[in-house]
Amino acid sequence: MAEIFAGNFGPFDASPVGRVHDFHWKADFWTDRTLTLVTSQYFTGWSVKAVSETSEWLSLIVPRTGAVDVALGRNTIEGTPGKLLLVNNHEAERFLVRGDPHLSDVLRLDWAVIVQTLSALFETPQTGSLALSPMLDLVSPAGQLIANLARSIIDGVRNDGPLLHSPIARSHLAQALADLVVRTVPHRLSHLLDKRPFLIAPVHVRRAIDFMRANIDQPITMAAVANAAGVSLRALETGFRAFREASPSGYLRNIRLRAAREDLLDPTNRQTVREICLKWGFFHTGRFSSVYRTRYGETPSDTKKRCVSL
Image (cartoon, rainbow, N blue to C red; front, side, top):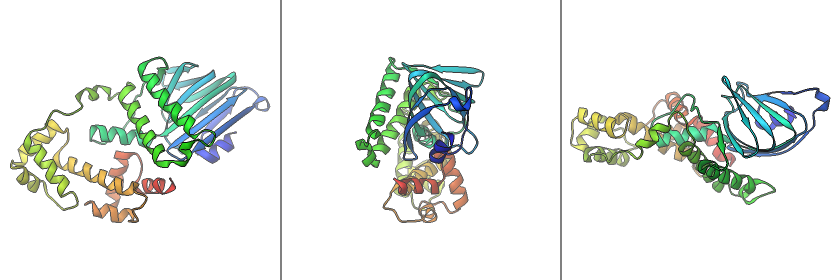
């Protein structure tokens, strides 16, 4: 089982509970690298944990019979029927699958999509643990919303479902799922959501943003932005810090990063990563790749490869 799963999803560490020859299982699985569905049945318990080479995922686990125990630091979370577990596989010390039999659906979302959603929402790169609340009750409003969307995705790909033939629809649903998780499940940044949307920015900040967007592919300076907004550099800096929670140069870099990402995600765009990098004013490819990965959780090359694979 471990060899089959690792061949499709990458390496991990697994071990049976009890004697190996008593271990029986069956599973159906599918993946497009962004979304992965595993519907499985186990007649013997087993445990699993990520290793450093394992891709980072948000696992949405819906037990139907049996249970899944997740060790998170000093706490162990018990997932049983009627509950929805949401776990970053790199933050869990171990998953223990138990029940005779155990039957569950596991929908996994590439963690890069969560990082992208956070970065777009807060307009600044997000790093470190999200400390996402690991369990939702399926009768709670958030539990119902997320479970219903997850079920739509699961039903859409299972048994040669219509989503298998619509990568654009899958991409939109994956983004919608990430957005729901970030907005409705408690995490360490939840308190910042109360500040959204930003207060209406003063006219000089709006003028500066309009000037940035109109000249996004030009080598503009902050002095030129301040001049276009009709204020001093200091006033420009103060305005952006207060109403956009970023420096003017940081804000410009972020909108350029988003423009570069749109090009990388465009399957019809034949430009190389370097050409896209230069197009949007990033003249050092290595530095661009580092900043891009910090913001979106993947390298520019990974984005382009993933888009082509879809």
